[in-house]
Length: 254
Image (cartoon, rainbow, N blue to C red; front, side, top):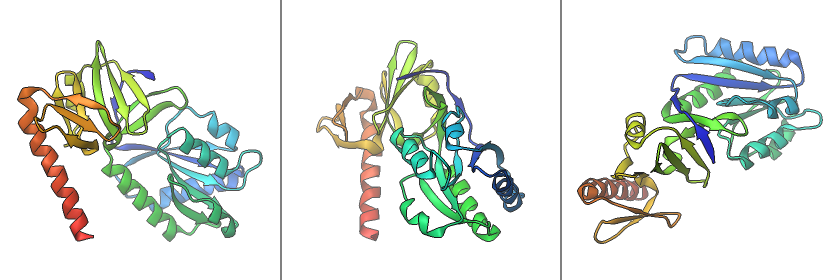
């Protein structure tokens, strides 16, 4: 569990570039700036010359351009590390040997680039990633591995008030404690389906699998039961039915 303060950061992104050749580091930075020169998004670039240097990094990286072929620690090893530790960094593999990419897929891998860089392809990848980042609401919290971590709101299961802190529980079972009260969290979490169901709980109804017949208890997909205050029942029922309807509509369309 991690403790600390939170802050919101919705328009500034950090891109990491990890390559053991300085030429390609500079080439990628210049190419990214070239294809994104009209964007309103502020982007900071952080450069790494080895996998070891990257893994010592304490900054959260929103996007990582990752050379597949590096000595000692390969791009695939870094990918595995980030996935194992549930670090939400979007990876784009970069290589001179296209055949290597077939072993480079993963849940955090969002694209592939060949050397030399083709600007048109890079622009498509950057547009896709920045659009995805822009659609995510998140808060940034301290993290013992990376120094800080961005929590995507839709990945939150529930938030529990505990004295001067709130405990944030994610769907991957990871937990963070933030020195804030529940009302302050409600003000910063502008996510429709994270609602106050009780004086001690905010719950993401998208992760609810069952509502008791009396609407007094929510059962989350992890089996956790959350109490519902009497005055919150109607609001919870309405939003839960809305989620069920949306899911049914998606199934019907498919």
